[in-house]
Length: 138
Length: 306
Image 1: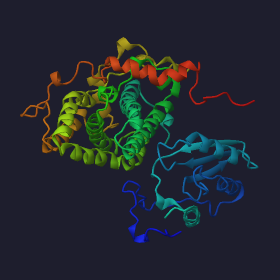
Image 2: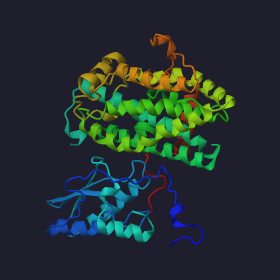
Image 3: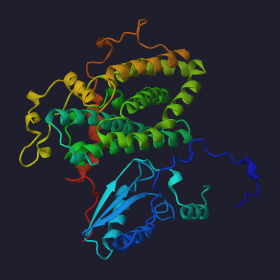
Image 4: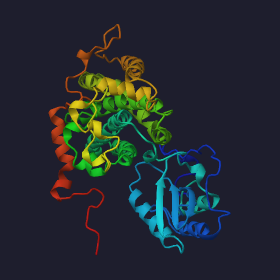
């Protein structure tokens, strides 16, 4: 919403809240497009998990790097936006519970990975739309 | 590749653990000190800046402690029930802030963050993949720490009063910052990390049999866990910080010939397992709640609901 008291051109974003575009990484963001069977259902379950601070799916946020299901064991490679993220345990619990509820999944293995490091460049178009609706400029 | 998939000889493991402890402990202990400023910084924005930097450092400590956890430790071993004398942070991290000395926080952050920047560069090509994988993430988050410190250095140096406080801080902190480049004394493997058949780790459960710090430092570099020696990093650090501090009219204890002798480094420098008396108080502080609640595991603050 435009401010009634300040012309928009006066906006001075905080110099240290710099949302840079990251390097383009092959195969990321991973969205599960093309997945079939139980893997597709795991991706669906992950889409339902939201970031605790913003109403956006962790898949659209670009946090999920890979999913694999092998003989009932689901493996999720994921990252966090920020190494000091206070919701690390909570997010992993949410992911574990969502994936464990999928038919055909007996066990869940979560790998936290840090490379390539997450950046705004990994947010999907749908994720950017959700973040804009939430009020972030992206 | 997960760390646990790599077979390590006892010497490799000791070198890896030693490097990780120095990295993790520096970040953790410094953050414990920074948070004291959260309610005392000169402006609300400074409160937030220091709190934010502390949060970054805690996040980085977690990334390094995670790798020690992959080697068999858990958070209680690494923090809450760890013997205080086995921490390997440089004493720069543990010193208390003299009351109201904002200049101390700025000089400390500057000296530490330049060192961290250089150390991370030497870890970017680490032969241990899980170390190399974490460097980019940390560097990205560290970018503004040095900039924050330099901005404040410049502001404080622009006046006699601020300059005096800066000089006091440099005099007090510089020797303890040199400790960052002292090879860390290895810590014997705890019994909890020795696998059931005792494979691999057994030779170093006995502190008397440990190689000395200099030998372990050689192994760290030979194995490529870090690609530069601490001596080289120390020289690069001096080349950065001494001219910068001098440009603000500040003197350092570094002699004109640039030679750093052991006499400049405090006898209790942290890396060697000897700490200042202030460390005991800080350790008691940050483990207080854990002990008071009678916890014996780290993650759960409260019992799980039935």
